[in-house]
Length: 60
Image (cartoon, rainbow, N blue to C red):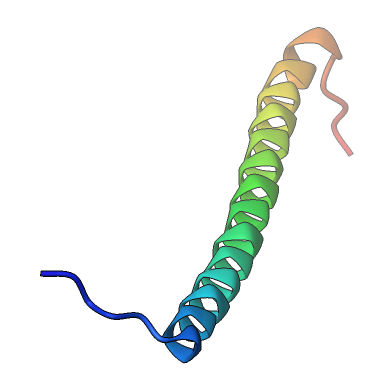
């Protein structure tokens, strides 16, 4: 039922979890950056849509 864990096994496990945590950490940061970029883009698009109504259009 119980596996006998040697110190080498424990070291491998901690190494694996550490690398996994690093990967997920960078993914979370990337996801947050993408989310914030998308929100900024959305706000910019909404603001662009509102401007023509407030400022009279100039025919160049």
